[in-house]
Amino acid sequence: MMKKSRINEKTFVMTAAIGSVLIMASLIVITFLASRQTISATNDAVSQVSSFYLEAMADRRAKTITNLIENNFDYMQKAIDIIEDENIKTQEELRDSIGMMKTLLSLSRFALVDEDNIVYTQYTTYTGGSRHEFLLQEKMDKRSISTVSIYGSSKQLCLAIPVHFKALGKNFKACFVQIDIKDIVDLLAFDDPGRTDYGLYSKSGENLSGTELGPVIGSHNLLDTLKKYVSDNAWHGIIDDFINDKEGSLTFVSDGAEESLSYVSVPEMGWELVVLIRESVIHDQIREISDKNLAISKFQIIFTLVLMFVFATILLLQLRKIAKNKLEAEKEHSRNLHSMANTDSMTGVRNKHAYLAKETELNAKIKGKEIDKLAVVVCDINGLKHVNDTLGHEAGDQLIKDASAMICDHFTHGSVFRTGGDEFVVLLQDRGYDEMPEVVEAFNQETEAHISENKVVVSIGYSTLAEGDKQLSDVFARADQMMYERKKELKSMGAKTRE
Image (cartoon, rainbow, N blue to C red; front, side, top):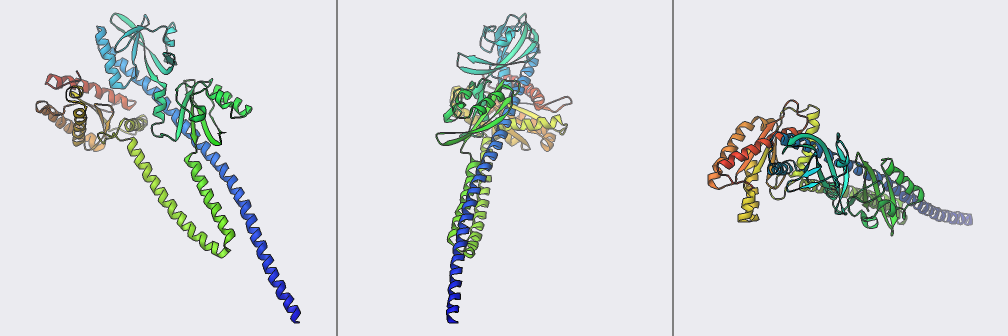
């Protein structure tokens, strides 16, 4: 009986020991399999999320290019409307008008073309038939978009529209602007420096922007370079996408580093916008979460289930607190970056980047007839160049700060933007709109008093949203013209000008 009892006890101990070993072995196997599944699922998630992130970014940046092109076409038409009304009689007057349009409407390399294909710029004239593709047409009856090379290297975007007016005894048939393609790419990367590379390419893979697309592709032909890193099927698929204006994305490995890129066609341009990202933040964050889960699994093998339950509970609470703090820190960091990207460092008011974003928002409301109280005040500092030339740029910077403070002190219920070196814009709605007449009168009185006191003098012009206005630039143009007339008036009172 005692022997049976001992055998049962021994059997019980052995059974418990073997059972414990089996449970631990099962836990190890399950943990190992779960780890492999977690790694596989994480990699799949990384690929899907990174691909979606890149495609969305490429699509947004392509729309930015389209908006830039449309805005330049609109500004060119506004410039022509103004020039036609000026009754220009001499080449000097024509060049002054071209220079004024470049400044007022921020038009890069703005020029006019007469019936003999003579190109008129702010500073010179030249024969343009051999330089510009659109002038080879016998008759230009629609807008033109082309890519031109400057001195055989730098690529530029050329936008042209037909015009019909007479000046200097000649009929003018076209106007155009030229924009450095590299400047377009720099604009796309403005709010995302360092993490992401951008490039603009032709259908054949030629690098039009001259920018570096990561260390592997660099500034080389995109299609020729990718052929070394992707399969033949994938490579031919990319070529087909480029030819047929399709968007897509791919991931390839070079020197052990994984790189992902996405591409999307730019409408009307014959261009492909390519976005490349290396070791993305999304990739790192998902991998970090995966590594922590694997660490917890390893601890489960070492400790008993009860201890691991307690440990996991504590760890989860800590992770939740860390994640919450990290999320708050990231939100704060994001807010700071957004503020820096939209704030003028010298004056503290919002900058041109912020103004363009606000312009897009207001254009949508104007188009949808969702807004009726809207005014634009255009401000320009008199004599900034004179101060810079005679007293130095430090004095000029102080003049800009004084002008900004004066504008902000008066237009307390408006949104103030610095859009250029000596240029500010104020947008007024609601209370600011209602108080505008009194504020403008007080501002002009102080400005006129400053002429004799040798203080900052600011010319302003204003206009309100009117029936038939289709976008904010319509209101801006009227305000800008009024500001220009005010500048002449202040000059007659003794105020300094750019001269």
